[in-house]
Structures are given as structure tokens and as C-alpha cells.
Image 1: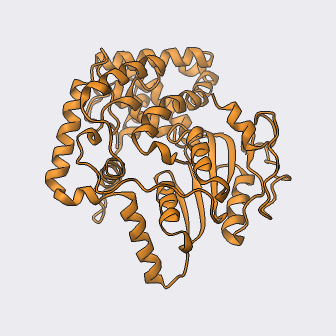
Image 2 (image 1 turned 30 degrees about the horizontal axis):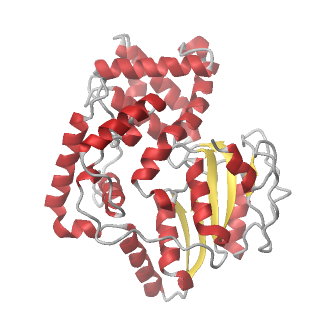
Image 3 (image 1 turned 30 degrees about the vertical axis):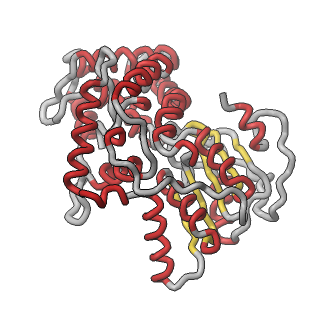
Length: 402
């Protein structure tokens, strides 16, 4: 949902964010009552096991993406003897659930991902005029965000107005898919023109397309995804309390990562949530080799370090396949190697015998997968060179992460 993530005011203040976060927490508590404390991943994993029982299966296999990987890792830890195969894509580091996952990784993740769109925008400099290189496009974007922070632009028929927070939230959402990058570039141009009062009919069409609400469903409330996201992220582990610490962290984060303008460190409703009903489940290291981790190099939502963190937490119970590509989604997005690794594992139960990394994948280049062998359980020694061209071991990848 647009506006889900809090953005500070133009002067860096989070006073309005804190008031809004507290009000949201109070409304959730009033609506749900004591049961709110029991919305967490551990209980969801227990529900998942009830599904297994109802199906009469001895073990369960699962494909999890984004939050789904947290559910898969928790299920595996609670029910090791009932876990068959877990494929986890776009990952969360267990040690950072959830405040650390947001505050410690999102700024860096956006710095990795943003240049993908900036390069696409620069390639259209003659038509769109955002800049001729990544640095110039980035400056144009930051100036636009600052201008909208100080004076939101209103588009007829669209509410609320386009401000800096909305620009950043929409940018975050459209960066999730590579197919959406051309839309994002046009959105930036339309927002730029709107901020100057010179939006064309084509700009208006783009903005209306971006802000269009999804088709309503009689069975699923419009805010279902956002409210469950909030309940689970607040209910899994306690967040720091009180606005003072958030203000200092947000200020530092704005300085370090201008593209996210302090949003990752800003205050959420979780700061005013009741204490979780139980401690976060500790992810079990080792055990059966039953988990495949798939991770994009430039995923801003669950950055590369998160996948590395999950792999370290699971140890030899997992194998790691990293792709030097952008976006939040990996399977079916252009890496034949990663697709074969996933399908091979889920269909045979055999993991790749090495942690692997692949260079960037495009539709014009058929990825080579001649060193990917989904057989055996032996782990080979990691090469010393970073993962830049071809395949290399995870140790090299770890050294390439700053």
C-alpha cells in the first residue's frame, strides 16, 4: 500500500510519524484485543503443520518468498522431522527480525538497486531529460523528492497529493520487478513535470496508472496485506520503544543513505505494540540438507546481506544460489541456472553441491550453468576471488559485500 513506510518531514522531524505510529498501534489493539499478541510467524508455522496433518502427509515441502522465507525457516526449526524440502527466495536474516532487517539493510539495498533504473533513465536522456548518467539522474531524483517534501503536488482525481513520501514509496514498490523499471522512469518524469505545474496529458495518464487502486475483492479486504504485514513484523520480536532513539537513528540514516531519507530507521507502529506473546523462534543450524536459498544481488527489499545471513544461520543445512541481478523476485526472472537449481531441488530433493553465484542475467544472454551440479552433498573449497564473473564460492561473495 502506498505510504506504508514512514518518511520524515522535510526538516528531518519524525514527530508526525511517531503520532501516526502510536495511533495505528492503538487502533489495532482496540480492534483485535488480546489476540493481537498471537499474530506471529511461530503460530503461522503451527497452522502450516495443521495443514500437513489435514492432508495426511508425513512431511511438507514449501516454496517461500520474502516473508515466506521467514515462515519456512521457522517451520523447519519447529518441525525438523516433518520438513522435506524448503526453497527460500528473497531472504530475511533471522538475527535481524524485524527492526534490524529494516534499519540495517534497506538503505544499502536501495543504494545497490537504484542505479538499475537510473541507467535506464539516462539512456532516455534526450526524451526524458533526467540526466545523462547515474550520478546526474540520482541528483535529479533527490531534488524532486526534496521539492515534493516541501510542497506536495496535487493531481486531479487522485488523493492524497504526491509528496516526497509517496514518491519514495512508489519507487520502492516499482523497483520490486525489473519489468516495472520503464514505468518507474516515466513516473519520475511525470512527477517532475507535475511538481513544476507542467504535467502533460501523457504524464497524467502515467500518474493515474501508477496510483490506480487494485480491483476490489469481496473476500479479501483492501488493507489485508498491509495489516497482516504489520501484525507479523510487530508480533515476532520486540522493537525499540519510545520516539527519542528513533529520531537520532533516523537523522543518521538520512545522512548516510539519502535515497531512503531515513525511512528504514524511522518509527513504526511496532514501537508501541504490546510485547510479543513468545520469544522469536531460534533458527536451527545444520541438520538435514533440505533448504535451497535463492538471492538476487541487488534486491532492495531483502538485500544480499540478508540472504548471506540466512545461509550462515542454517549452515550446512542449506545451499546458496546467488544471481547478480536486480529486483525482489528471482525464480522465472531470467536466470536459467537458478530456475534449474530450484526445479531440480524441489523435484529430486538434491541440492547443488556448492554455493554458487552468477553474473548478471539478461534476456539477450543465455546463462551458462555447466558448473551447477544438483548432486551429492559435498561442499567444495571456496575460491579466493570475489563473485564478479562466472561462478565462485560464497566465501568470495562474502568478501565482495561491503
